[in-house]
Image (cartoon, rainbow, N blue to C red):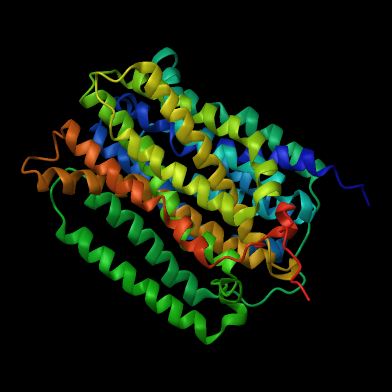
Length: 474
């Protein structure tokens, strides 16, 4: 039997695969007009390419933990990379819209297995006292891909063609696949329970329907009755899925046992609001910069690189901060700072100095990175190894759903604000963007409010924090 590779190498491989998968969800945004001309359709019709990808992720991520336990983490992760890479090449070679959509669905199936199973591999590989560092290392792709995707896609589309957005995944995917087969052990779960088909179908419809309905409600076509009906049915399906899952909790895709832990529940409830909030800003700001500031798409995208710089810079401070202050205080402080920095973005105007905009976005990027890392890491602080796969699968599904809803929530909020101010949402004004951003800032406080029930030493075994308490006098 070969000697396991160092956790650092494994974590680096997983981070690279994450970046490839997550980047693909955002990079085509600026390529849609050129792709539409290639397929001889309207640019709006290409939005289904992004939607199909996100819906597929929402449906198939919940089964990732069960599949990994059944067939082995290396087998599933390698298969996911292979499927994703092949689908990328086929996306780039597509000559018709229907063909492209089918390949995006196939790509989404690979991505749905890649991210949660990759995180599961890291959870099983990294020692408990190194878990914070490992998860911090693999969270930056989730944040950076959202930021650098649009400007990178615009650059490739402008100076090459949209096909290369997908063809570039071929060498990266083949390299990652080779390293996966060399470095990762094929670990299976100790107990594989029967698959929870009923919860899968009900939860899949709830997740996909919610994402679709939210995106449709945020669109500019003005029709809301059908999306609202789909949203209501999706919420009902979600409620039924929970009721069905409670009848056989031991084998359910919903991890009720882990939800009893405050550390895990925070990452499900409060952190979901936070994920939506940080997903809204990279959507609203470029629109505001282009529509009300008069900047080009590429110029507005470059502004968001300050977020990426803040993300990377803060990584050096997360672990020392957790060791010194613990999860509870860091989550509260970074959550408040993230909300404040979002609110400050609502003060931007064409007269705001460029350096000040960059500084504020850098500040926001740093604290959202810290909060994102903390709320993800604390979820696994009290989870026993035997239950790590189920807990990770359910959390991954919730994380994907929250991230997918970010853009939709931003679009809906902007539309509601515009209508409330008495004009069409098709031509939003500066004050519409500012009010929408202020509303979104409140969502970022979700983990702060949820942390009020955490004990001072929550997650101490993972963070390395030791609470100093005075011994009572006798």
